[in-house]
Image (tube, rainbow, N blue to C red; front, side, top):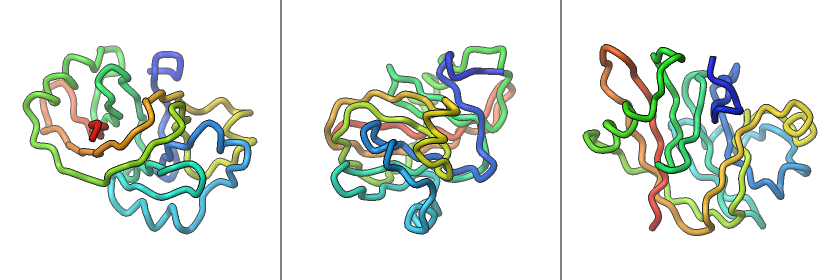
Length: 162
């Protein structure tokens, strides 16, 4: 099984993740109705007063990883966890037809990707989050579901600087 130390977070019961600014985690109260409404798509932006935008990742309760160099969130639908996903993801980056999603205004620089239902104390106590560092700025979120292949199938969301 891929671990947080390797850049992977186990899936959630709900399938909803949020990219929460690290500075907002202590005051985070867990899932709110407005975030559930935002999560009807695989990737949605939601304004968070004083913290820029939140990225909400919806869909199935899948394992999720962050590939920092590629600025890509990876959610495997099918994948042999003993393999390195980077070559397959890099191939998808070159060959896929990406769907444009929301534009995010990210202001914090350092974020925690976690289950949308955890409150701040749970997030920090459980340690069930991925640290995501992204320079402040505006980013277009693009999504791609890779075609089923003999080795893997992924939902991918990438952040492109605007």
